[in-house]
Image (cartoon, helix red, strand yellow):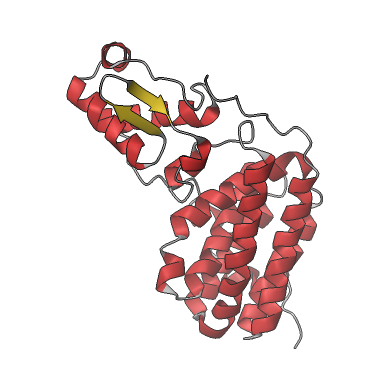
Length: 266
C-alpha cells in the first residue's frame, strides 16, 4: 500500500495553535502550601541537594523557610514518605532514603529528575520501558484506532513539523504524538500509564537535545507510524515504533556528560 505523504494531510489538520504542549504530569498538585513544599523538597532530594542518608532540616527550620504551619510541613513529609524519598523516625529526625527505595513509578519522582541529575543507568532503564510498552501500543493501535485517534496523531505530528527549528515545540509535539498512540490502543491499563509515559518521554527527549541528528528524519519516521496504523498493518506499526525508539536510544547513547550521584551520607 502506498504511504500517504505529509503534504496530502495538510488540509485535514488543525492549526498548531490548537494543540496543547505536552509537559510533565504531576501526581501531586504543585499549587498551595502543601504542593509548594512537596515539590521544592522533592526536587532538592532528587537533584542531590540532600544525599541519601542525610537528615533534612527540622520542622522549625522548614516552618521558617516556607512560612508554613507545622501541620503543613508534616503533611508534606507524609507525601514525600509515600513516594519513597524520606524516612521519618521519632527522635532520629527525617532522613533521605536510598535511591533504590524511591518510587520511580511515581510521575513526580521521575519529573524531579533532569538531564543534569539523571544517571546513565536510569536513562537506559527509561528507554527499555519505552521498548517494552510503545511498540505493543502501536501494534494494538493499528487494530483499534478510530479516525479521531489518527487525527490526533496527525495533529501532534504537525506540531513536530512546525518545531523543526524550535526544539521545545518539536519535543512537545513528540510527547503528544506518542501519548496519542498510547491512547489509540484502547487498553485501559496502558492508558492509565499516560502520566508515567509522558514524564518518561519528556525526560528522554531532554536527554536527546544535545545529540539530536536530523529532525527531518524523525518526522519521516514518525509519519510512517501513522501510515502503518491507518493501513491496519500491525507488524508494520510495531516495527516503525521500534525504529523510532531505536533512534532515540542511539541519540541518548552518544551523550557523554553523565552526572555522578552524590555518595550517601555517612
